[in-house]
Image 1: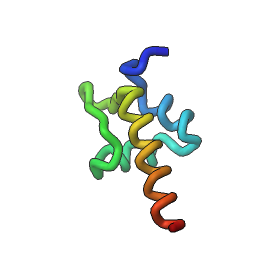
Image 2: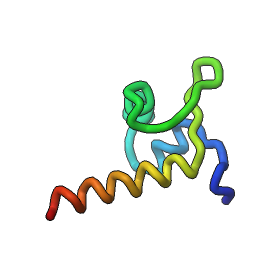
Image 3: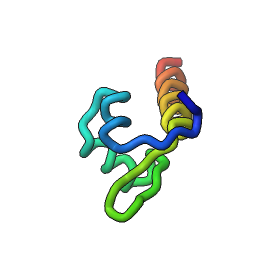
Image 4: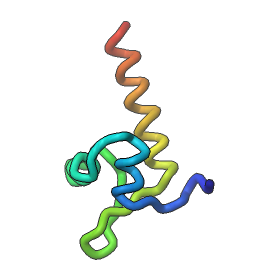
Length: 64
């Protein structure tokens, strides 16, 4: 598994255990870093991992 592997929205959805629509909404709002190839969203694995870490930090901050 390469850190800059390109993932499809359905792969990111599976990884995060959410719907594909949730992934596209997050991308459209700019909360999840991605790029479009035609009409299809694509994501770098390293950006998804960074998103996960940012969400964990955000939760830890709220708990303090």
